Length: 381
Ligand SMILES: *Cc1c(COP(=O)(O)O)cnc(C)c1O
Image 1: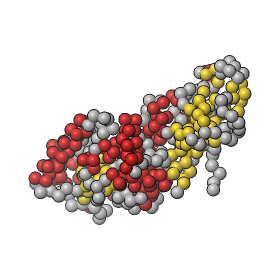
Image 2 (image 1 turned 90 degrees about the vertical axis):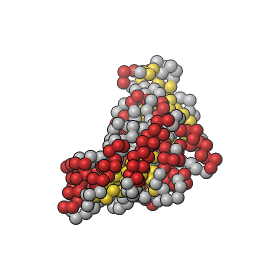
Image 3 (image 1 turned 45 degrees about the horizontal axis):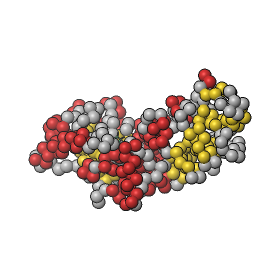
Image 4 (image 1 turned 135 degrees about the horizontal axis):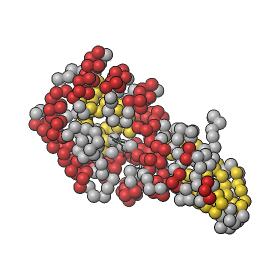
């Protein structure tokens, strides 16, 4: 094994495959799964996650941008890949060269894709993006029919899918999700009325997969639950209830470091930049070689715990770029090089990424994506 830094993100690929299998168990037969591995697999490493997803039965992979799709291809991933965020004109040639599919929502882009595909003697797969309420990417639902009629004339385009993205599927009130869904179905009815064969239709992100079975259609696009984190704290009860039906999601990333120094300091000792914490008693303060340069969000300063010897140690003082302090006064027998768990389980204690997100007012996604490239990912197959 290579000599890793003391601060690592351990990635449990068997948990990842388990989560994909759990998703599969929630779907009707024949519903396809597009495993979303954008943003370097939500910080877990896109290539190992993509390979694990395919191994566990994912049909498609979802990237956000061209470079992510190319990276997968260059590392031997042959599964169908959708560049969900679409492409700019100058990216079209490379997209086609790597046999990637793209989201498309304007006719000029569709024409350009068709031209370049013809030049390369290939077909290019497109998924038509319909905006049903995000106000972000996609054509209006009313435009879908005429768009499809136009692109049917483009010989080198293969209409592989039609999709939309839901803005609010993680909320307890389903009203807006239902509205988005209705808008899409309405547009599809217009296609059916013209006898147009429907391709893959996909809407469901993690939250919708868990809560709105109607949204599954014939493909789903899970991201965050593949990595064992919650789309939102509101979904915690939903996931808890699934355990009774043997459906579970396991955290994939554990974020760990080790104690590099222990200081015994008298009461009244100020700690770290700008003295944002002062000891109130004689204290044992342990230093960890992890900081915001590793993606540990500085807003967590004086507002998070770290696990040491199976117990929670409060983080104290401002989180620095490379170093962080924890108060281990109340923990027996702490030694240099003791393991410190920022996210994960140690003994009986667990801190989830969802816990950490809640502590600093963000979502699990941001914490995971933020783990910087200075942190080695260590894979467990
Ligand atoms: C990121 C993304 C997903 C996955 O969302 P999760 O909430 O992580 O499941 C699905 N579809 C699109 C278009 C996305 O951008």
